[in-house]
Length: 154
Image 1 (tube, rainbow, N blue to C red):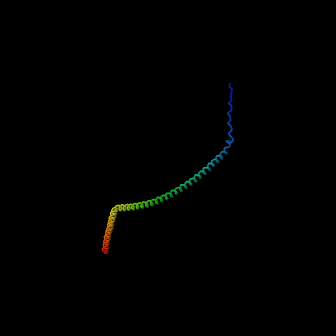
Image 2 (cartoon, helix red, strand yellow):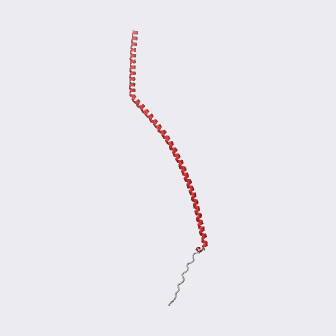
């Protein structure tokens, strides 16, 4: 009745792979060499970062120098342009004054023109009258000379 049954023994775990079966004293050096590699890479990146920061600082300084040079040149050009503008403005004002003087002189001449024409006509009339008077005098003189010649012949 009591048959004792014995349970089969539990299955044994499979053997670990050959690489993982390394003794614990061999795993520590592998970890240390991995950390050393990481440490070397961190140092390399840190030095690269420092070099990049240095280059960036130099570039910033160059840009600041360039900007201040450009600003100085712009200011110089603006001053020159302001001087030229003032000179041109004064020349334009001078030309305006000269044009006003010329316009005034032309208007004055236009106003005097009728008077000059009248004076000129009067002078022409006087000259014509003088010529006519001389012609009459000459005719009279010629007529008197003819009478004298006729009287002398007779």
